[in-house]
Amino acid sequence: MKRNSSNTIIIEAERERVWAALTDTDELNRWETTDAHLDLRAGGSFLYEYAYGPSRPGTFMVVDPPRRLIQDNLVFNDNDSYHYLNTIDLEELDGGRTSVTVLIEGYGPGIAEQWLRESMDLGWATDLKVLKAYVEDGEDIRPIVWQGLRMGLRYVSADVVEEGRRGIHVLAVVAGAPAEAAGLRPGDVVTSLDEREFDDFRGFRSLLGAYKPGDGVVFGVLRDSAAHQIPLTFGSAV
Image 1: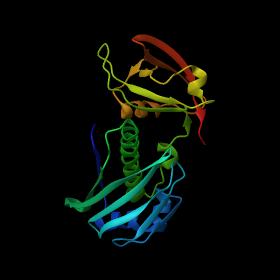
Image 2 (image 1 turned 180 degrees about the vertical axis):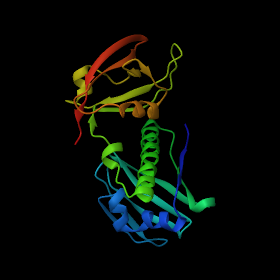
Image 3 (image 1 turned 30 degrees about the vertical axis):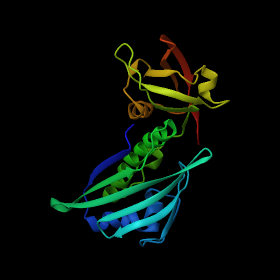
Image 4 (image 1 turned 90 degrees about the vertical axis):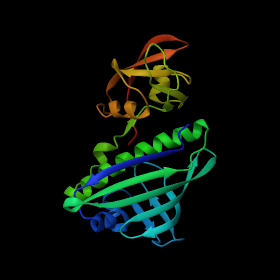
């Protein structure tokens, strides 16, 4: 299993401006967090509180303004906890632009950590888009990119390839959620939404962006090598 993830974005702003957006608590609360607490020094602690996900506590390992932050993150998943290192590098580019790269390292080989890696990878990719919109245009696009769709599925990219198709492997279905009502089961491999195929975790999440709570969708599912069409109505997670 891949043991790291990396995302990069180019922002049309000077490096010092991007650094401020990443490290000033008042600014963070305008685009990323609801309540940020940062002791911005090597060995200092941090706590990020979010409207759309669990809190992220940890310790700063390196603080090198305006170039690099390295964070030791404590991540909780069910009854387990994990440590991952985030390295955030800011590189000056021509024309007053800044390249921002986030590398996350330290994932183990288990399925739980595959789920964490894919979830955190998507989270950082999305947060970088939110950061870009905030720094360049002063916009908070969180309500747009973090839609409150409720399915009640826990899933990872599927390892299997059947009939040339890939998809997501369902790990768990939440009791009482739309996925359970639709009849989805752990072990299902979802290969399409409304006949649109996708390859992996990110591809699935990208297609979900076209839907809103109350919309219906038909999941293309492989179950015990047999193809099924399973309709589902999205709930609201807000």
